[in-house]
Amino acid sequence: HSNVLGKKPIDHQSMDMNPKRSKTQVNEFCEEWSVKPGILDKLAQSSEIRKALKDRRLQEIVSSIDTAPKRTAKLQQVLDENPEFMQFVDRCLGSIGATKMDPVTSCMEFDASEVMLLKKPNL
Image (cartoon, rainbow, N blue to C red):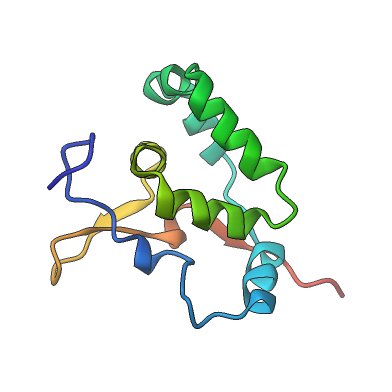
C-alpha cells in the first residue's frame, strides 16, 4: 500500500500523536517549537499542494481545524477519520522534505529535525 507520492505510507504514530502524551505536553510542544525558515515557502511553491488546496472540501477541513478550540485534537480526529486528508498531509510532508524511510519498518516517517526549530526560552 502506498500513498500518492508512490512511497510507503507515513507512520503517523511516529508523529506527535503519542496517546501517552498529556495535553499539557502537547501544548508545551506547540509553544516550544516553530517551523524552520523557508518551510512555509516550500509549501506555497508546490504546485501540487496549491492545486489540492483549490478543493472546496479540503478548504473546509483545514478551516475546521484552524478554527477549532482544540486544534491539535481536531487535527488528530480528522487524520483518524479522513484518509484523503491524511494523504494530503503526506503530500505536504513530502514536499517539504520532512519524511525519511525507516530502515526497520520500510515506512516513511515524519522527521521533525528537518522542519522544526526549538524556540529560545524566554529569559
